[in-house]
Length: 264
Length: 287
Image (cartoon, rainbow over all chains, first blue to last red; front, top):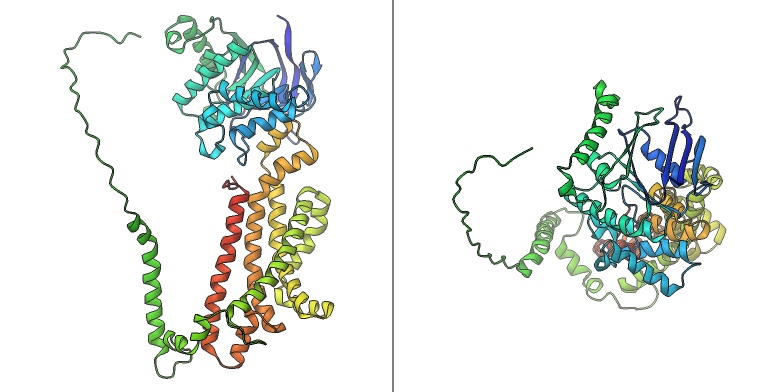
């Protein structure tokens, strides 16, 4: 496996906290791979994503992308935020356009940038709502624009921070299918933070399970050996899917039960 | 997991056709009446009570009918001009509004500028904030003697009083807006590498806009409060002095008419700024 994104001995400690949040996290991701990171809330999985995004500094260790150390945020590691983070004063089109103008102004002419934005809108099937403002569209649509905005930067790695956490189950399933479709078409390397076991098994090639924080680290990595494209209905009774699901559940609820819940 | 077990005999599902019911017609007139009737009723009751108390023997304030009888010219023709200070209310209000416009324009420009500075610079914030916190509690009229001494003329003094009254809420709200740009937006800007002036124009200013307009709305309200009081003292054409003049000539009816106009204009000013804010922030409120 050729290493594309490497997290090497990553330790993150916040000032004043006696114990680091993450301790010696090791992870190697291949190009085009879909990796899910799962763990109980408070285990530091979002912290890990923020370090990869460059929004948080590593205390020790670091992140390498194509052999170069990550320092600071950049469009090569585009983030889809949990709460979509669209700018409310811009339309859907303008939200994406801002990112494109900012990151691809050297590569593309004005005309090409406009077409590129329209292409991204079409990719997430939001062309019809391009002139709406974020408060005029539903949560699922906002998240689709968030995904389009991230993809529009032509990132090397797409970072998804619990992208479907705030959505209802039906919308979530719909968006998961869209992300699988986009991943199949573009072959983008994706790292996704989630706390949804089904989502992790359905979408990813590998599931990285974090132990409980603080001092969290990679407890186990599960290879999801299911061919793509994947169909959620067919997989529901597939023993490989069921076994993978059981393995993650076993890790989360038996061996590494949430200490906060266990104490209660 | 196997759900299918014994076959069960079920009657074929019957489909009840649903005839779509016509939506009840919304009566436009009734909708308008719902909003217009209650204030009219309350107003009528209020005027009736006022009329009753005002027409009691020994009443100190005129009843509505007396106001109408005594100040009919003022109500019916706000545009007359007989030279000097004997003008219709329109001209007095216009003079006051001109002062407010100048003072408010000054305080908006300077207030937003200083607010942006305080919001972005930690040093300016620490240096200026304590001074502002003290100065903003000084009542508007307390500035008047000082500004009269400094400018030696009524007009600039009045404008200065408006400026100094309205500027504080504008500064403070602008600074709060700039400091409260959500971390989410900062993260987005960081990922697309939006920095320096571009970050300021494309993220900070639009994110702070709702706060800035809140400051402007408070500011215009305070300006209108201050100008009436300031004009009472400085004289000349203006609604404030008109009221004072009417009091000196014991013309209570004129005062009541003027007060109603002052209220209406103040309300209109507030709505105008609110409307401008809605346009500028494109209907998106601070979230």
